[in-house]
Image 1 (cartoon, one colour):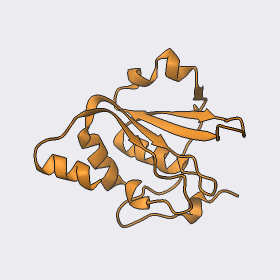
Image 2 (cartoon, rainbow, N blue to C red; image 1 turned 180 degrees about the vertical axis):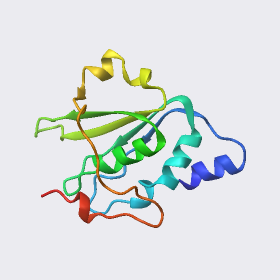
Image 3 (tube, rainbow, N blue to C red; image 1 turned 60 degrees about the vertical axis):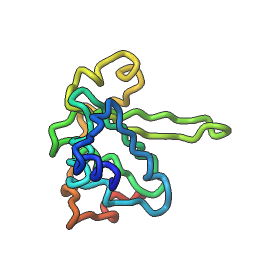
Image 4 (cartoon, rainbow, N blue to C red; image 1 turned 90 degrees about the vertical axis):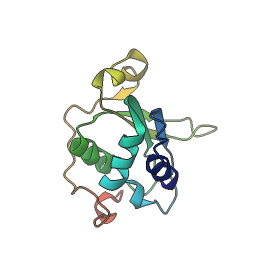
Length: 140
């Protein structure tokens, strides 16, 4: 986050085509990276036709509702990609791909791997620098 802020402050934003967030699989997640202020920063550094890929696999927390609520807030298209793994060499993983342009996510390579989410809704409150709630996303 600090690097992205520094790039913007210096006028050297990279306008990334893909920005990958992969820091949420441990026991202690950095919630400050999953709020409106952080997402504003990501979107300022993402090209208009860029994709934000968020690795949401976590044994204890269901992060999908958090990302879904943020996507709603920012008007982003989103797709959930789940890979069951094989328990031997590959672990199960979940990714949410986000884009301003829905056509970027409507390509066969993504669409064919997407988990159907047509009726999915998130009812959690939008996370900000002043509010987050891990209890509401605990896995049962």
